[in-house]
Amino acid sequence: MKQVNYKDLGTVPYQEAWDYQQKLLAAVIDTKRQNRERNEKGESLLPIRHYLLFCAHPPVYTLGRSGSMENLLLDERKLQEKGIEFFKINRGGDITFHGPGQVVGYPIFDLDDFFTDVHRYVRYLEEAVILTLAEYGIEGERLEGYTGVWLPEKSGLPKRKICAIGVHLSRWVTMHGFAFNVNTDLDYFRHIVPCGIKEQDKDVTSLATELGTTIDEAAVKEKLKRHFAELFGFEFVGW
Picture 1: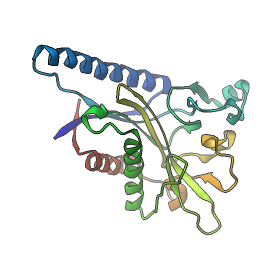
Picture 2: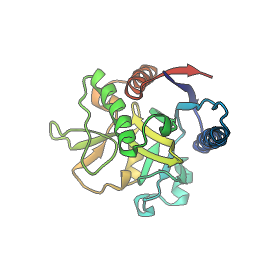
Picture 3: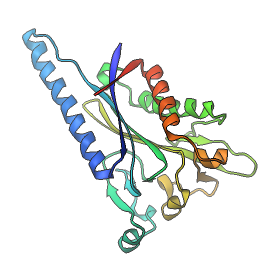
Picture 4: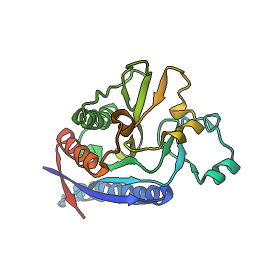
């Protein structure tokens, strides 16, 4: 069975986590390059290492490749006053928030070792969150035309996004991933147009908001890990 190296980084600055992802991605790509050369020489191949990182970040807004600066509603001075960082990054999608109370997941997977289908990959990320929500009695769903995981309308509430997803691939190796609002302070989303979605019939939410109580984030991570392993067909190892 395939193995995935798991590490919980705890709370880590966004730049540090981004640099770490890029380091792991480069190492995986280098192993793939070496294996092409070894294959041509008839030599045994090196094992491909896959990684899943969980973490949280101090408050930060990130803007994806297809995003618009118009969706950031604070200027540089206001960002500094509120202690929020800002980064333009190379994932797909528009603007989102990362901060305390989120479970952020960064898979560094070589999809050549799983399946070379980006849409299927994103669906699996969504499905891991949907299955986790189900364990809390919450119905998660996909929304046509949008990535991420949403909750359906209920009791006068609009459709609510509970998990944002944005990925980047290089030579079929993934980076970036998902941000699942567990105990997140949703006020931070009021300073952006989340994911560039301007419709008034959509909002953001968190697991704690939906259940009306603080959630054990360690338990959420264990559920997510189990669903990742089942969906992708691997076992976890530490390193």
